[in-house]
Amino acid sequence: MQTVMVTGGTGYIGSHTAVELINEGFRVLIADNLSNSEAGVLDGIEKITGVRPGFEELDICDEAALKSYLDRNPEISAIIHFAAFKAVGESVDKPLKYYRNNLVSLINLLEQMLIRSITNLVFSSSCTVYGQPDLLPVTESAPVKKAGSPYGNTKKISEDIIADTIHSDPSIKAVSLRYFNPIGAHPSALIGELPRGVPDNLVPFITQTAIGVRDVLKVFGDDYNTPDGSCIRDYLHVTDLAKAHVTAIKRLIENKNKDNYEVFNLGTGQGVSVLEMIKTFEKVNSVSLNYTITGRRPGDTEQVWADTTLANRELGWKAGSSLEEALATAWKWEKYYRESKQDK
Ligand code: NAD
Ligand code: WQD
Image (cartoon, rainbow, N blue to C red; front, side, top):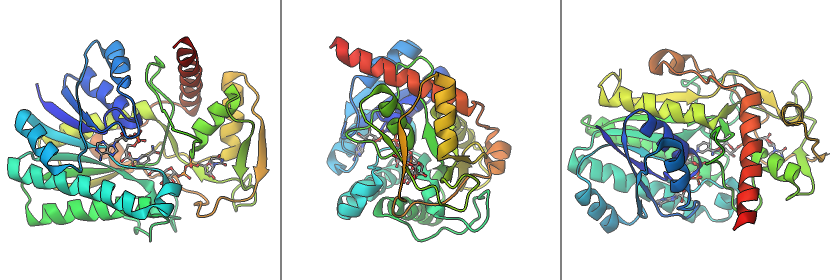
């Protein structure tokens, strides 16, 4: 049985990936400093899979603690690196916090991988590296644009750090996965997204408004050059996204990669507008949403969706869930989470 270290594994995407890895027979060791997640997530993973993943509260930026952790877990053969700060707005106010956390953690991991001959890395990148692409759908060979935020820049720099490291020492293999917009929750509603404070992202804001935690959803602009005037994104179900990590890690472990460093877009290939998201959420869940149109959010990309041909062909992966399913699970999770909080 292969042992995979999952940094940031109690977080939103990491926890869903832990489930899929366990389902596929991997031994999962989660290392997370709980800066943006709760250890209770482990209970959810255990309830879904019947297996409790290994867990250690660990800051990947703490080099001594990371070394000690890897000393104690020599069976780790692959790492999926989710751990990072991800709040775009906060990164503008506190850039050094983001550069330190997101880059030092990656450098520490790569150094230890080289020393210990851990050869397989999957890295969480983002469609944010494309900015507003010139051509849609966007392929992996589209130019990487100047980042719109320090957070986005950490993803671009991280990809460069990985590529340069592998160029200097091809004993390491890595895959960067450029996620588009992950939404939804595990169909069991035992794990899901846990935004702290006021959510930045659209779907948690929708579900919190529908349940009454927020008064009104602001639609940031209806005067874009899109069919209904609102921005367009490529929203994919987090469970589909999680499964792509399993195929990527298998590809590396089984030496099926075509290059020592590969990059894949992960999305549905479909662009959906903010207003379409609202309509679909209302229809699927039979709820009505209080929303209002306001001005544009500074820095927003007008429209972006993925060309997923490469991931479809090379990873044998396709986002299988519909938008309806994703939005139904998002709502189920919101309700379950609020009810479980009331029980406590
Ligand atoms: P998340 O905040 O839910 O999960 C990240 C986890 O990393 C959290 O549990 C947090 O406690 C942990 N963490 C942060 N810094 C750490 C450190 N130094 N040491 C140990 N643990 C640390 O975020 P997520 O949505 O699950 O995102 C996972 C990854 O995917 C991130 O790298 C993020 O930038 C990237 N990503 C996310 C999205 C998205 O929309 N959610 C889109 C593209 C890329
Ligand atoms: C989606 C759409 C908003 C909230 C973020 C990160 C990016 C990447 C992907 C990690 C946009 C609109 C939103 C609201 C709204 N993440 N919206 N009202 O903009 O694609 O980017 O996630 O790497 O780095 O910035 O996602 O969910 O914030 O917004 O109208 O209250 O919803 O304008 O069009 P986005 P999002």
